[in-house]
Image 1: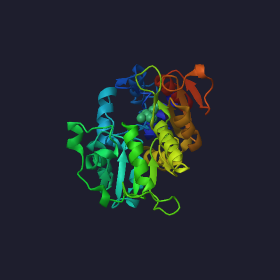
Image 2: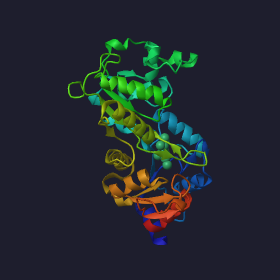
Image 3: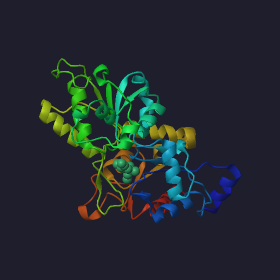
Image 4: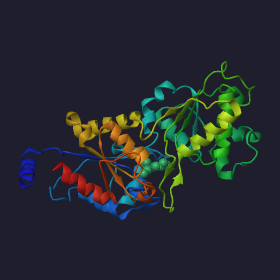
Length: 341
Ligand code: G3P
Ligand code: MG
């Protein structure tokens, strides 16, 4: 150790490792930072026996607001400064595909009113609609949701009989599943124009469907995991198949997909590790074997599973075996430093 510290001091050796931290169930639960999280972030900020600052990114299937807004919120919760250049959320990866839809009408689901519209516009989508806009246009689209005064202030007044939706993007976890599933079915079954006559599958214009988070469940501050966007996707596909005979084809982003981990590797390489990047030097710390551990293992990263989130040992071994299993993120960081130095 002393040799490394002298060598590093003399030659400014880059850190031999980097972390990718999941958020929900690892660093926070609901609005509350987990105590081991603050200790772990302090250790990698240089408060370790090697005196080395360890680079890290945050890699979450969460979202719903802009990256800068979430980084500010997380910084407040965790007591550190988090830069948007080290933060990837469920829909960040859409920045790499927006060029295909920039000038086309798209339906964006999964957030509060205008907030997500502004996030999508910030990525470069120019014609962004949501299901509340549709309800404002024609309340009979879904008679069981009356727009609140606040919702009414956030809608974009539109005549959807003149709009042909090209794609549906589920950015984050939908709030009104029934309204959203109804509008998704209307858009897809009519080839994009809500309320126009049903067009049989083999003759209608196909509407692209993109989900950004496959998590069936996630760990909030409730005792048991909560349903995530993956459960919404199952609900939509079950209804659509019952109505039309088959589920609708879709594109999936978010952990554990290769697209999201490649996007993360690009960020790690550009910001921290340069050409010395090697997947094996990245330690992913997560609570969900189906997303965090599966994605890291496929990417050739090291994976550390913690017991503070979705994974519960009493339910038996994880389907995706991690490199190592520990109680919490502080133990994960300490173990990784021991491996790397
Ligand atoms: O909606 C967020 C949830 O699905 C998972 O978040 O941070 O555990 O990837 P995270
Ligand atoms: Mg998690």
